[in-house]
Length: 281
Image (cartoon, rainbow, N blue to C red; front, side, top):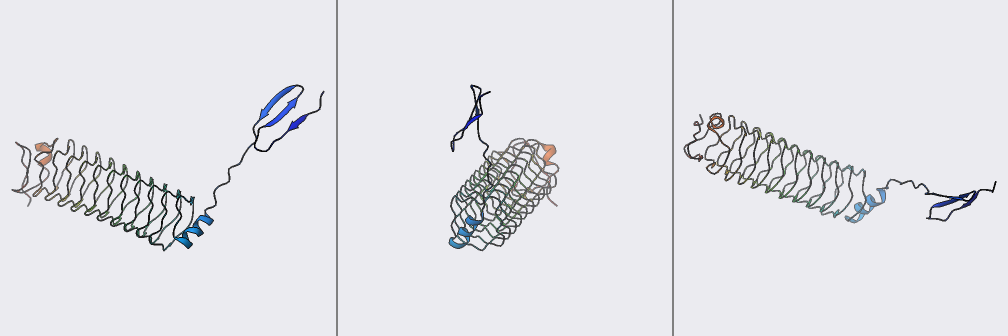
């Protein structure tokens, strides 16, 4: 039998010749998990780490206003209790990041991936979340007053007791989201998809739901005084014990006398022709 002959070239397949037969065996390469420590040091020292790899980084209590993390990889990172007002996270991958109780006022999250992120009790007033992916994110008790969520995907997110007063939520996807006791005073939800969302006990005085899809939404015990529902879809939505005083639902579709009989309004409530609502006591 001929002796075993082997040839190994770096970066090429291993070639083994045995009795005239040729076998190609690809070498095994083991992927080494990235070490985020050097990127974390760069961020702490310079305030900028664009496109950095900070996956799984543990950087709690970071005090870094105006930080630039645009395009960074922050998947599974722990940035709890951070103070990062006006930071730039545009286009960053922040899936499953932990940023509870952080100061993110005025921060830019446009186009960022925040699926399953935890921003509970964070302060994000005036922040920009336009076109961000916030599916299944935990935004409970977040202060996002006057924030911009235009075009964001927030399906199945939780925003219980959040303050979104004055926020812009145009064309937002909020299907299946939970917004119990959320403050939406003066907020703009024009064109938003709120199908099957839980809006129990929301405060939505002067809010705009023009062209919004509220099919199957639960809107019980809500304060909808002076809210506008032009062309909104309300089929199978519940309005039990909700206050519609001064609200404009004249162009809304899907309303029935049975649904309205469980709500209340006043003389200034506008409804589609032929429908009525009991007076609030």
